[in-house]
Amino acid sequence: MPLVRIDIMEGRPPELIEQLHERVAHLVAEVLDTPVERVRTYITQFPPEAWGIGGVPASVARREEVEARAAARAERDG
Image (cartoon, rainbow, N blue to C red):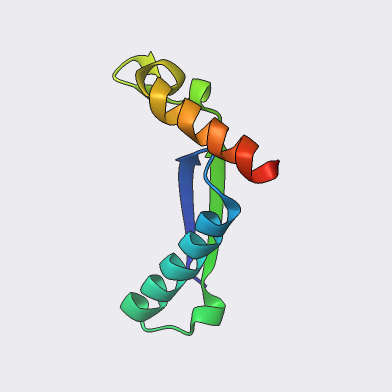
């Protein structure tokens, strides 16, 4: 039973997370020649301040991206 773990910065829409689960599972099943039903995926989302990029928190280094995701999430959640 293959298990794939993916760590990403939080803030992406649920639809993208669902798509990531699906596409990764199918790719792993194809490459390993195993039924997709046996593939497990686990996605962990971390807050931007928990990520470091070149010694700088992602909340600082990628401020515009983080703010854009937060705005999109607020608009989507209404």
